[in-house]
Length: 318
Image 1 (spheres, rainbow, N blue to C red):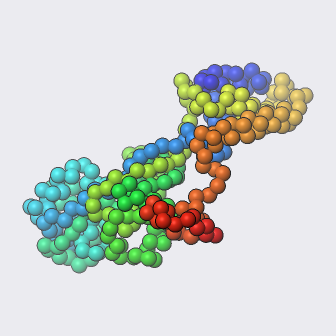
Image 2: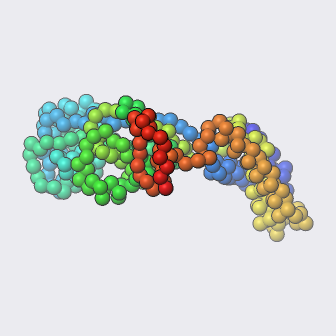
Image 3: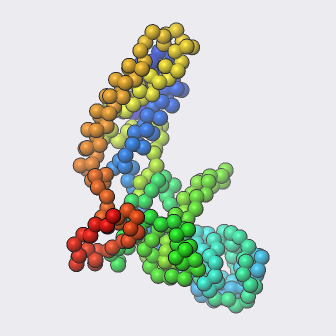
């Protein structure tokens, strides 16, 4: 059912309901449906890219300055990266990690002042261990290393990695993806969810990832996915419109004398019947909600790869 058909149909369900409120209620109904389970149509694939680290040449760092001066060799290597350089991180030796906010050869600009000792000719590294989730991101489902055949652990936070490896001295192929920070939207940038790969990656690898997207708005020209029947969407929309009618019955005589509460209960019963049936069908398409993942038992924090499971029977941990 197209968006415009849905809200126009809703207008006939409740007297005095105007087009603007009908559109809001249809959108709210669609949002509620999307939030009710991990639907198959809310899955997307992406790839998390860890580029080769850069350590060519040397740099000069100055305490309490955001500017890092690269020598000629370093400037050439950094310039080759292009605009992507602002998605990477910088540090000297095993010092603190800084985000790179700009590069105008031969100078890097850091996201905060350099707090360590001033030094010329320093060994440095530029890499990417902080990644930005896709714009429609809600949660990770899985991230894998297809070469070494293991799945990432996705249940850690930056604070936990801080306790295990505050210096970020572990440098290898990563096997954890931890929540790092949330950056709210501004007039110039969209909101961002950032995650940290650990150990710090220094060699190129593309990690295939499956994630769930956040709810999508209903707008002109769009239709709900085929698995969601029109009747289910409209039952939820009528349920919300009857609530609107109850709250506005004192304003409009046309709304008085009608048992909106009873109608609301009937609409909810109709919706729940559709929801049970459609949930079962959705589960048959993409089984995901019936059981936990024994590869990553809750709270155990232990992940096993394909090599392990080829030689071991499943072990359940609680």
